Length: 287
Image (cartoon, rainbow, N blue to C red):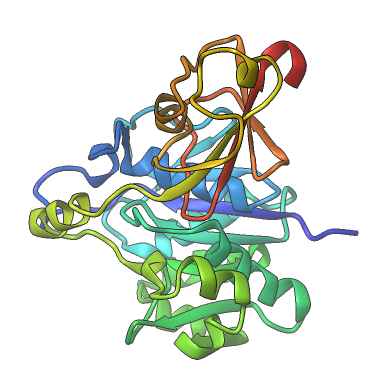
C-alpha cells in the first residue's frame, strides 16, 4: 500500500528583510505562494496545507488546498511545522515542508526527500544539507512528529535543532541528493533550496528565464492552425497557461492539459518545472 505523502507550506513569517509579504510576490504571472503550493501538490499524493499567520491575507491557491492558522504568531518555523503536521493527522503519513519563498523548487527534489521516509520506516526526518546549509524548510517529516513539535513550542524551544534532537534524522548532502538520477538531471545545482529573503534576492531570481518545457498538441488541436507543428517543441514557461500561449493556444474550457502524461489540469496557473512535458488536447477528448 502506497504511503500517503502530503505537503506543508509556511506562508507566515515577518518578511522583515523583504519589506513586504513574500507569499504575494509576483512570479511569472502567478505568486510565490501559488507556485510553491502547486509544485508541492504535484509531488505529493495527499493534501497540501498552507500555514498562515493569524488574519494573514493569502493570494489564490490551488483548488483543494487546506489553510490553517498558526495559533501563536512569531514563534518561528517549529510552530509552523507543528501547525501543519497537526492538520495532517489522520490524512497522511509523511509531509514535505517548505517555506513560501522557494521559486526554483522542483517536484523531483520533493519526491527525493519523501522517498527517504518511504524506504526507511525508522527515519523521522529527511533533512537536506544542500549548498552548504541544513534546509529544515525543504525537508520531509513524519506526521507523527506533530505532538513533539507542539510540546517544544510550549517549552519555548523554537529552533528546528531541538526537534531534530528528539527524532531519527537522515541528512543528505549534495552528493547524496544527486544520487537520484532524475534530480541530478533536472536540478543539478540543487536550486530547489534557494529562497528569496531580500528585494535584491527577488530581483535576481526574476532575471532567470522561465523553465524549459516541452509542449505537444494532440487531436483536433494539432490539426488546427493553433500550433506551427504537430511534433513536440521546447518553450520557456513557468505555468501551463504560459505554455499554452507559447504554443499559440487559448487555454480555456475547451482545452485540457496533461503534465508528463498523467497529471490532468485545466488550471492555467498550474506551475511548471524544468523537464516537464505538457500535452494539450481538446477538453472533449481529454475528459
